[in-house]
Image 1 (cartoon, rainbow, N blue to C red):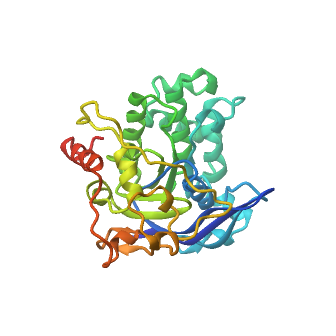
Image 2: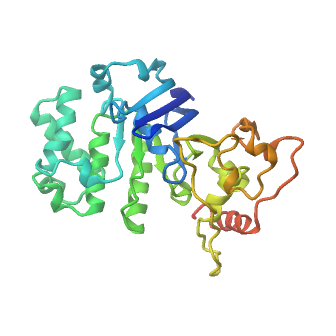
Image 3: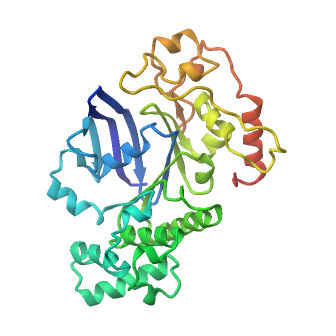
Length: 347
């Protein structure tokens, strides 16, 4: 598979009145053509900051890439000028934001908002752009698309607005589509429709997708690979099967344990105690140690490296060291894994 994107030792910080917030710390991953990579973790884990960095959309001057590389087709995005990035955004890398109402211009008709990128990036005249915009609305499943072209965002439901945002993101046939919590504000039925829509469109366009979410269950049937983030770091990465059937990091166990399945039988969901660390002063050693009941003394003094579980699976936990005690996931987590397996991946 050909690599579209390589992120190497990415560090992103924010300057605040209280000091430097180290939002992303040494993140590494790659993305292949036609692949879906899900990045999951709690709020504040660095998922969205990572995705914004990929498009140079960090709020300036406070947010900045401190070090590292973001190689898109071999060229480092970090070093590109604003004018060069304007040619990449929307055309090569597009983004679907969490809140469609804030992503759409309330004063512009829907048709014009889709046409805008086609005219700017594709050089289309208004007539051809209008035809293409209509095709895109039909592609994302907007009923009576032609009449909807002249309507405004407030005239659409939340699910329909999100479909419009997807249409805008797909307008210029991007090579990478970043979806930042695109289904959070939607009900379960509409959520499933949007996820199915993205899968169908990916098959048609062969675009790669980075799917940002706090909910592991959402990505069970969508992602090819999953990266789990905590305190600005990727703590586990592997194929979807690696993560759902053979998770190794205690934080991943916590996320899996908090995910309901059809086999719950009314039992309480597993909960991760405590809260994420303050990234003004990241803890020494393993950042998850204070919340990890399996933490060892070494976790408080030394940060674990990425241990290789298999050719596709890596996890940063001292539990994988050859001298560590053999620890099994909690029973509640095992039951979630079994529940996931018995439903064929439908969590």
